[in-house]
Image 1 (tube, rainbow, N blue to C red):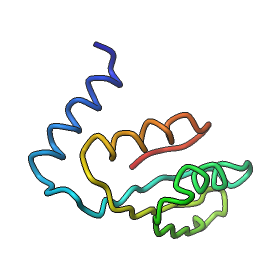
Image 2: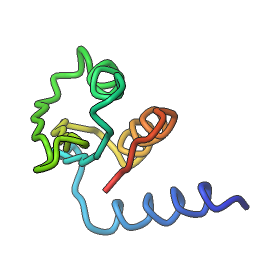
Image 3: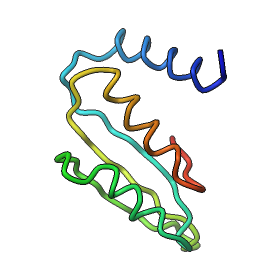
Image 4: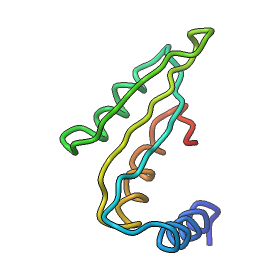
Amino acid sequence: MSDKNAFYSKLKGQLEDTTKFPADYMYKFIVPTDENQLEEVQNVFDNTGAVITTKNSKTGKYISITSVLKLQSADGVIMYYKKVEKIKGIISL
């Protein structure tokens, strides 16, 4: 089993143990400001009803992105992580 599959399997178990779905789930990411990663993240959550907030770092090199979205299951949470992980330079918190 790959590291990513093991991570997502463990995350699914933890979410199912600690969260009663449907629930609001908060995603937090950090992206560099010098490319279009912010737009890519916004596109992932486009038309989902997600509330997205951003904050620039003190140095201006990074942008913190918070997205809150109502999801129906742990699988839904993981689906968005898998979509976002394809964005170059993104860090999931």
